[in-house]
Length: 377
Image 1 (cartoon, helix red, strand yellow):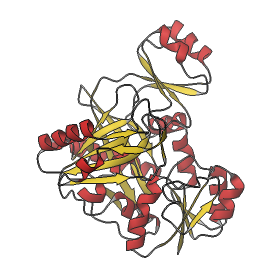
Image 2 (cartoon, one colour; image 1 turned 120 degrees about the vertical axis):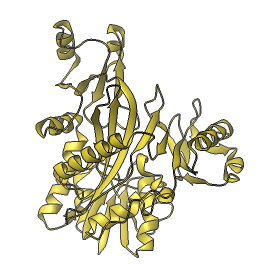
Image 3 (tube, one colour; image 1 turned 60 degrees about the vertical axis):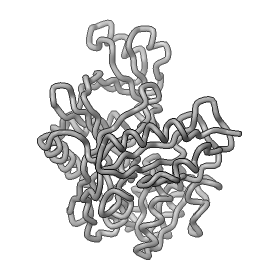
Image 4 (cartoon, one colour; image 1 turned 60 degrees about the horizontal axis):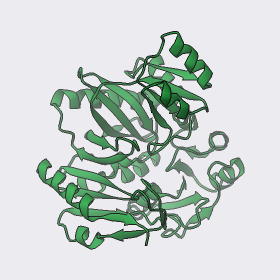
């Protein structure tokens, strides 16, 4: 079988190793000429994954078509599916998840737990509802489409914050009193078999809204773990997805678990599975779209996953200062994505730290944070 992947970023790059292990015939398409996959793959085609003609042309030459990012042309995916190409995740699912408004409506219609929200076309409608007392500060504004890595999320604490609010179609969500944020990756094949990874606890940058680090398994009660997995399984079955589904959850200060949002692909919150679990999210994604048995998701050892982010004030050709110190640490696995240029808070790589004591993992994280800089020279 010839497997096509739309996207050539770091997630695609990390699909290459398990594909090689299983001797899969995997091909990629992206418009980046010097991206992470373009640097290592001989089966890489130049094309725009948001362009109807590029996607259909690429898709007609593969047996199975999948994605490494959800910002793709779903009209092309739907046509290819009608023509008999096996497209996973399915186009309707991708289209729903692309739009945070449709995604939230999906949860409400199926009785899945999520926060209160409202859909808006523009700020005038929101101001009207604020005046009517339907919304009180603070609340969260999210763009319906194209938000990622903290972009597209705006915290609104007062009337003053509305001056910097988004004007494109958006949703407003109530600001939840959150005790802990969880990430949980699930996987489902065409037979309906589901594999779930242990939930991880996530810590985000307070301003950039991007993941700083996460600990897996999460330090929560067994009851909360079981409830998180129950909800994750329910969401996965509700979508009927084939492939990976990364689910972000809020645990409120009252102990309730709410769905924040999901992604239908390999995800930042599952990077640690490469070293810390029996079968990585990347191998399981490939197994799922090929309808193979899913790999075991057991945790081998606790881990701390940290993003390597571009330092503030640095834009241009990347230089990693202090990398030698990090590579000398036992149990520390460095993944650099192969991006030529850095920008503030751009994901340039990740590091997975393994160890049985959480305090040790956090101490290693603090050491790396002090000694590794992502800068320009």
